Amino acid sequence: MRTVLWTTAASMLVAAATLGAQTPADDPAKVLVGRLALESYKGTIKGLTQFGDRRQGTDRNRAAVDWIEAQLKSYGCSNTERVTYQYAGRQLRNDSTNRVDSIARAAAGATQPPAAGAGGRGGAGGGGRGAAPRVQNPVKGFTARSGVNTNPMLQPDTVIRALDAQWDTPGERQEVFCTKIGTTHPEEMYILGGHMDGIGYGSAANDDGSGTALVMELARILSAPDVQTERSIRFVLWNNEETGLNGARAYIDQRAVLQGKEDPAGSGKYPEPKWLAMIQHDMMLWDHGMPGPDGKVNPEQRREADVNVEFAGTSKLAAESQKLAWFFRTMNDRYATDYPVAVGDRMSNTDSDAFRDLVTSISLRENERLSQTGTGWSPTWHQPADVFATFSDKDFRLGLNAAQTTLAAIALLTGATIKP
Ligand SMILES: [Zn+2]
Image 1 (cartoon, rainbow, N blue to C red):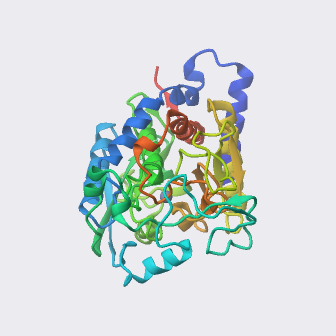
Image 2: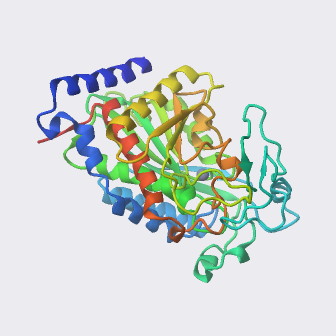
């Protein structure tokens, strides 16, 4: 069934190319991708950074959820809803009595986390990290230390340090979503996700302001009054990703059973359309390559930067998910402007992982999570340097290329059309 959808979308694309598009309306994906703009994407990331690292369970996190909801409404994605759940755990903090924190610091092999570009002992063959690499994840070349910064005093910007000062408190949490309702198949939907919470005493600009802003920009473009889609699209900004995908898990716990049910009966309304795929966006900006022998990473975006589309090769739905990943690469080939897609089979450690055995699932990222991010390719990861000013237009453009890729794919998959 799902295969049929990708195949149908691909043959529609071929048909459009064969006929030769005469007007922009013949290629709605092209029109929609043309509505993406680097400055708008950057502006949305910047808007998110006004709330610091948006750590779950804090006032700044709640203020960010409110802001995101107001933005979605202002784009015309006005049917916003919230998932409410309880989270009893605590985020990592600079406190030796915190067990999770102690484990994290032991794993990082350091009491002082590295600043951006200042990785520790680099070394061929996987030196420099305390944690053992996974068996299925061979580490090649040089690596640098990574870990979670738990010391607020390492944030040099006093304004950001003050923004990030409040600790999280166990209790109620919320996350927000809105939905583009399909015209002919409102009972089926694609889920586009990014996580709005962050960690590390920066501004969570890249992790994951960049993915959150991408999903918000797509909500804006697809909510334009002249855009129709046959199938529904849900834009979800997960909370509590950094504590273990708890926001995504709460969504699944509460809503999986509601899938495809019309409510009230005869209304034509589907509170939870049937899931067709879950597409996650997490850390979209930085692909500067492998650390060198000194543990440092090139300060510039590498010319051969790419968007990593990963599926879980070990999931029950690996075959379907792989097909979707390759479809995304085809869409990138055709519609993205600067950077290609590389497909991998080790999707991990982000919200789509919670869905991996329930529905076709992929993630889009700047690097492969396990073999690259996990070995020091992303030096701002969970660090005070994850602030807006760290990133250049070349970095933001990588995120924009991921947005172009997902927007083109979702336009084809949902049968998007544009009214003349
Ligand atoms: Zn993340």
